[in-house]
Length: 599
Ligand code: BDP
Image (cartoon, rainbow, N blue to C red; front, side, top):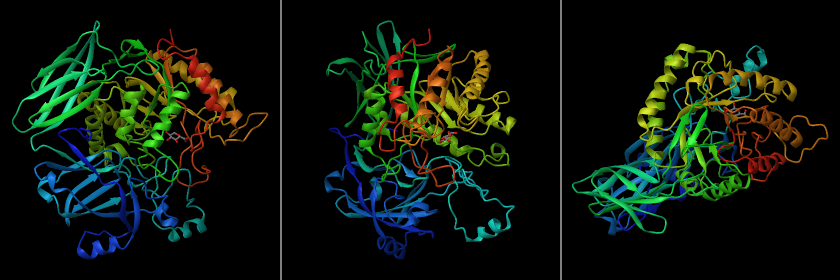
């Protein structure tokens, strides 16, 4: 799916700003009375998560439908154009009504969807838009919610008569089976964009390297009758290659490659023309390959230094925040990191564009987090399977052209040990499905939890073994000698496999400003010692090709006895100030080269 752009053939109308808004437990199907009901609500910012924008606690704890309403007019000059309404992300389920008619429904809160409204709207006349948003999560949604009455990090002990009896006082709440706040609403931009009536629907670019030449394979999908032409322009504006036809192979002599920063993340532009339409796509020339225990970018062994992140900040929640993205990239550079994982869902497209430009490597993750946590065989029941496939298809469709994206993560910490056969079948089928869909055939993985690695048959078969481990925190809490021993025992196991391994999560909750002379849990000194102890062990192992501390920054979660103002494992505070561990990694990572670290 192409990102909306403004050029001489295309334009954009931004529908961000103030909308009417109302929470409601009832389903409003957009009759006249319903419209009046919604309009009589309150004001709301778009894009944003609605949860932290009003002081009534209902906004934070709401479970069910929320309604957004606004009117707009498309200027008459666009009457000859094709008109598309695009939502970058509505979390988690959306129903869209235009002038009283349901025009779209969409499941999944982290990927875009769009509706061709050319025949549904009159340019120059006022139109009314209502978006109904459902934030409920369960075993059919990704991320997954619990349906069995236990909240993440909390328990309603049913054996205690008074606790069991008090349940009737509880109002319905979302019970995430994941550790981040279930921020909801129109989280990313809403735009109308125009194209000519005959238009370029999609462009796919894959690249290769032959000696000093860059190979650019392009494939276009266009609607209408006409010819396609493609021109490749370098960063100085010079034409370096060109071709005609809907698809083709172009050669750029002495090509400049895309390298992670501090290398040059060089970008070319492909100008694609079809009838009166034009689309300008930026792309980089680079290769990615797993060979033996190495992860090669442009044929050189890369070492992942970076983080698991979240889209999360005060007030905005998970609402799109370009300023925050800009700051995060700056802090990633400041710490000498080169990569992150989009834990635990696809991020806003603008972040990927920034990473292309700033040379940051991305492991691109689906929202499949929280699969498990139930006694039923969740894979055999399979209420989420087709949605998971849709999400992978749409993720690849959206992100396939980004040079920054080097690997797909199908999900985070699914339970693969309790249900061996059904889990095996599920993840293997999905692995082949993902591989087949990606035109660039990037490596595919999923990220496993602290499980019984001897029984887990699936993680070991991924292209890269990605493990989250909390030795010294959730296990062997506070005892770093024992943690070091346990980690080494497990690493001996992985070493035999001779596959590349990334520690995709390890971390310790830390309260900024809490200092101790003798390091114990939650202190800044403990966080540094924890990382230093474990890092020294990875440094001894050639197959360990990356370290992603959890988390880049503190982030918000559901309230519960294990979380004081959210998850505090950030190297940075929620407002992006460095804890001592950020300074520790800054020193470490500036000394570790991006390429050839493990000789
Ligand atoms: C891991 C999860 C991550 C959590 C983290 C933690 O992947 O989402 O935030 O644990 O507990 O298991 O801090």
